[in-house]
Length: 282
Image (cartoon, rainbow, N blue to C red; front, top):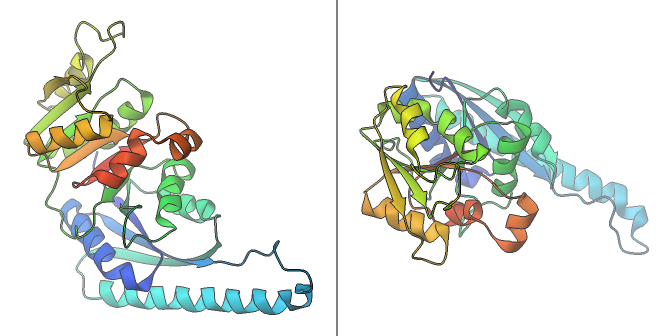
């Protein structure tokens, strides 16, 4: 098993350079084919107009659609110019999606990708659509996603890996998706934070996962950590620093996306706080 199809989605010409550099570096490392979706957002909200503005609706629609088409052409031109001298296999697709409806376009390609590379969806400099793209890859495409923090344009990560393990289906999905990385890693740490006293792994937290990994030729250590900080995300960030890890593997959205959006959750917090790449799946 290896990553042979890698997808990234570019939504702005201004941010294309760093994103493409990062995706190219990974595709070269994995000897993979890189697919790039140049996605322009049509920001028309055709159901909302002020009273008296209805006669102008066709003009507004036409102007915003034309703007979206121009943006799509600019993104594609920037991406193709950057990829032209590269010595990897690549392909570029271009699409326009209405605001809030990027799922089908991203999912159409993500379902055939081994890995979808996305920039950090939160924080300064992030495009508003990146959160939608990440969720579309996870839920519409059922793909594994690699989130890269700002400024990360190389592929020098995955040597020392922390696996966040909480016995969930999402955690197991992330581990399976990360097997190619874990097999190549020199250090794999299974981090179990405050395991339940009456859970199925109460006598040996992380033991069954460690056995599963060993059967794939992956040597791992298990770290059982007390929750000494307010949030699991804080505990994970500290542990990543303590073991000098350069990649986190974790399941995505163990709770509903709506609950995490309103109340917060480990997925959202780690995608915002992580200083190392995060490989996740649902």
